[in-house]
Length: 566
Figure (spheres, one colour):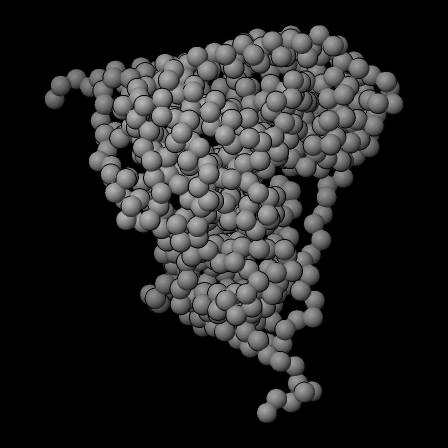
């Protein structure tokens, strides 16, 4: 009989579940195992957090990542230890690259056997070091008494800008330990880096001397949308990185969108007299490997002080939260009654229209695909992309997106992550009741990597359309081989499944597009389907793009000579 004076004991696994609920987590992803069962058993018993059972840890990590990005909240992934933690490493690299706030909870073997190299089942030597290498931070829980404290710290680190994935090991005997349910399950506060007033004064003084300034918006500026609008009213032009898409709606006439590296745009930059880079790392593939000629002076705002002078030299640097810094800047420029030259935005719109027309012309038969997907999608959708020719050619700039968290893509350049990301985004849309349909574009070469997650897509009845661009090979590698390797094709032709039969076996609705005349009807069918749908685009039947994408943008392509006969 229970003594009413004694507290009810619960497992540490139940404490983990209760704490995540307090963090506002609505869904989590992972693979059940003997080394995480106390946590997942608590999920099932409490019934508050939806758990999505992925078919592999790599896919689960991508799902949690996309959930975090598309809902602007904490993503959670739960794995086993050893090989399972190794499987998720690539997904954590992607989340680190994208700055996605993901909490990765992994089991661990019993504390008495930890780090003793006894070949214990599921043990991985130096696992914590591996997780530290691929995460923003990694922690280990040693006792039941400090489990909640470490969890709180892990979430705080993940959610503090610059955000990123954090791993936490919880040994199985700690998960199973019985303790009283803690009274205080609230997460720790998230600190905001306040920019120095003097630094903002200097920045405003410098910009007040300009007439044609641009704002370059990266992912770190996602929460600064209202301040950006104030600066737009003062005449600033906008250009976005891929991570910064949607901070300003991409049908806004004052924005270049993500058309940031095209030659006419580079020429336009030279007519501008300042660029303020906000929350962007100025990554290699968005700066022509750091050779893109940006306006001068170059000014920067970033929460990471180490960004000062990184990749590009900058004249001034303000360390602090992007929202606070841009609000402070807008206050100062408004007080001065400063305005940019009106001709700036007219010139911006002209160059925008020029590069859009060039891009669309280069799509050849696929221009209709882009146009009609946009028409069917409307404005409220998730746009998830894998690394494939179609994304590199148009997906990173079109479809147009209108909110800061609509776009999710494989920032780190790893193939095969798009489809599990679509699952995470679709689960996020359901959890937040956003009403968004999830659209995902993927290539057949990468798609096969996480093929098992198609079963997860169907089991969870994700409201997602997978547009599979099928050319039966690594198309972009073929183009690189043409451009740089004397057209010597090797290892790029792939045996691919019959997706109609595969989808039928999974009870996944499927249609194959072989003629563009059939596109409108098939798109309407796909979009009207509640739940998952695969639209397979037979690129061998339809034909190739007019312009050929041959890898990440560089200013100079090097020809690799053939080897002499041996």
